[in-house]
Length: 286
Image (cartoon, rainbow, N blue to C red):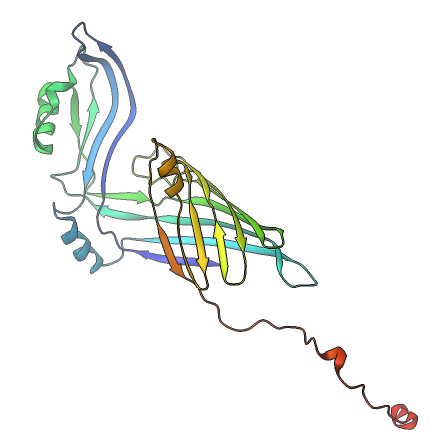
């Protein structure tokens, strides 16, 4: 299957530091000094200072890009029961890019200069304009022109899912996500590395599952969920939030799931049906 998406950019903000190298020392008083710096630092922002206004105006405009999802699935079934033993799915999601018109006042880029013994506290300020002026005045960086329109790469990722019916009502699902976007482009959105194992017990009207996930952004999380009839609710991190002091995420999910159509069932009364009448030999021959 495939999905094509028209993208409307509500707003975009980005700060980046690329190819940065420097010598960082600590003085006797504990103050930090930077020497021999190199690289590029940038801050970008679209629209005005009102994000809600930007979202509304941009949504009513024209699409700013196109996204594409591609996927395929496979099922291995039991020939006797018709139930699946293994489900496999693979997909590449968020292929594409979008364009963003930058606000010239809020979007600036600088090349870091190799100044000796620079005190980074001298560029602090109460707002972005003051910080930028302090950077230019200090000589630690030189402003370079930026394009009025930037291309932003979507967080392209490869996903692989396997759902295995281990034994009767016990299932085990594994899901892996790997980013495919190049990290050396500061305007590329990066999907997180993600691995999740979900053992679950599934009956006709009840289901319970405990997802254990490992993410490059959220660390290790353990959750719990249940499904009652068509309604399901749960969390991917509630248990780890309770058990760990270093938890980085708390989330909840709920939904409604229903199917249409009916499954063909074998008629169990066939063996009890009356035997067919025996036809005369001559009629069978005809």
